[in-house]
Image 1 (cartoon, each protein chain N blue to C red):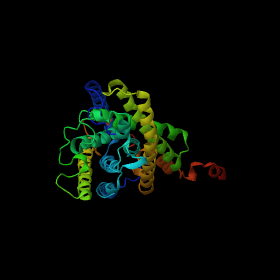
Image 2: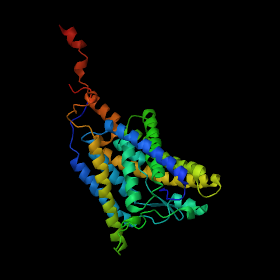
Image 3: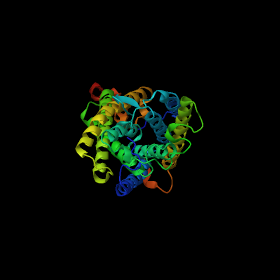
Image 4: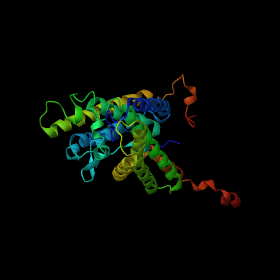
Length: 237
Length: 116
């Protein structure tokens, strides 16, 4: 859903650019807590992977396609603040090098796909991780629902911006219905890809999934030695 | 609290290979239909308000390499280039931001718990 130049008026574009800049500034601070020697290369890889998979448009309905956004997936893999930075780099390269998404719309696209999609996807994921069983399946369901919801919410956020600063005069209700509907379908693809990728990484290297740390901790604590209950020994003498 | 720290080099290289294959080869098979936003814009009559990007004539615009006539080769090269550029920028940024394994002297409050 890369927004081109021209859809939104200059005021709205400037406002979203300010929101995007503030979000990225916060993320530059927050990401320092998430990144260390091991996770930094993972973040670079995740961004490159998201760029690649975003090229894979899949058909969703007659004459319409969609592609992964990757905000939820990235946040679960490397942490939400780092995800904002990764998504911003992807969108920046797409806009500047590949003319995908407008230059004046870069702030809008960062707001929608690096801030809204990451925040919604990760927040839903965290809530469901707490509510669902602490298992691999529970984690994947939480990730899938978060990824799924991030897409229509980002699409409706665009409609919200369009209602404030859309250049064209069109019926907003029907635009919202069309955008929401088609992005529900694209969200299903987003969920499928995100769950498949997370499942693969969890199989090979579960220690590299930041959002799965609660599962790792269980594994470490599980083999508690029986010597922690010394009562029978004390009775013997 | 940390389990034995395993190296990530092999995983990162394997993941990069997957990304390069997806962008370089898999993208041949991507749908070329308009995406959800373009489709909605056409349907509701505001597609014409889109203006060409200022970099619409750049050598890699629209995921093709200018001057390469073979569509698959052009798209594949553009995809591979994009993966490497994103890797360099995102990897470089996160490497600059990361905590060093040896705690930096100017940030004593960043010492992780349980190291002593």
